[in-house]
Amino acid sequence: MHNISIQAPKSVVMIRPHRFTPNVQTAKDNTFQGQAAGSTAEQIASQAHSEVTQAVSALSDAGIRVHLFEDKSAATPDSVFPNNWFSTHSGGHVAVYPMYSPNRRSERRHDVLELLKQRFRVQDIRDYSGLEQDSLFLEGTGAMVIDHLERVAYAARSRRTSEVLLERFCAHFDYEPMVFDAFDLSGTPIYHTNVLMCIGTGFAMIGSNCISDRVRRKEVLDRIHGGHREVIELSQQQIADFAGNAIELSGSDGPVLALSQRALESLNASQKALLEAHVSLLPLNIPTIELAGGSVRCMIAGIHLSERP
Image 1 (tube, helix red, strand yellow):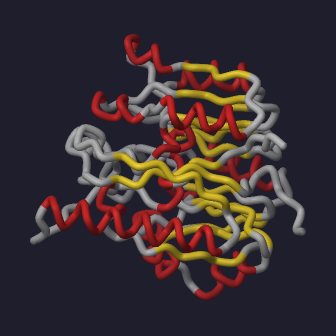
Image 2 (image 1 turned 90 degrees about the vertical axis):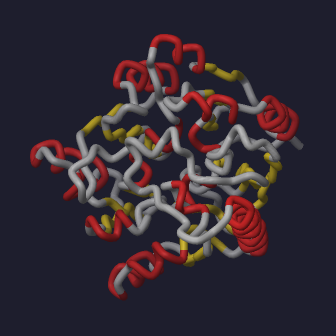
């Protein structure tokens, strides 16, 4: 049995949508969203359902335990991205988050939290969702990229990432906050940090050129290097192709990096070789899901909790 890294969970939560569609409420600040030209709503929903089904199968075949939930509602178009509304942390801690877009707030599910309590050791659930009334938002491990080994929460400022709430989260969960400004190719603030960077056990991928302030950019890179990780730089175009939106998981034959087929195809041979020194690459073909402006990392909520016997 391979050693399990606390950075790379072996169990995850995923949601299979039955009425998927790109979310009109999030399009204003998510420039990664796209349009499915010539496809009906029914075709888009069917394709997304199939893509999640195939992704779950591929992850399961790699030895990752997927706890799959169904969503048949048309009121929650982004439910396929559960990592935004909850996160789990070693020691039995769970956080529930306030969401920026009103139609994303219904994604929070008691049955998911009940599964966590039944199957894993949960000491407490800290629910920040009531802070939506105060216009304070922190969209989980979309807004934050968490280094579980070095106890750092990296966060790009955006409408979906309240610096006040980030500080509060870090105080409660014992993380060091590292906040910065980052912009995409169009000059728009990057809406979620997890499209910009991915922290693995022995490596990190980051589009550091998106971080506008040179001094802060160096501080972020120095902090990542401080964890003795190999840093793989991503271009702005690779970020646009979701290369940063990946997640390391613990499979039955060792660590894997789950990323989209589009993301994999954007990487050059040298980058792939650097990654393959640390992980096996597990591409998932999800072009319809990516129309919503998120990719594989957004689809996977890692479970960093101890299993009950």
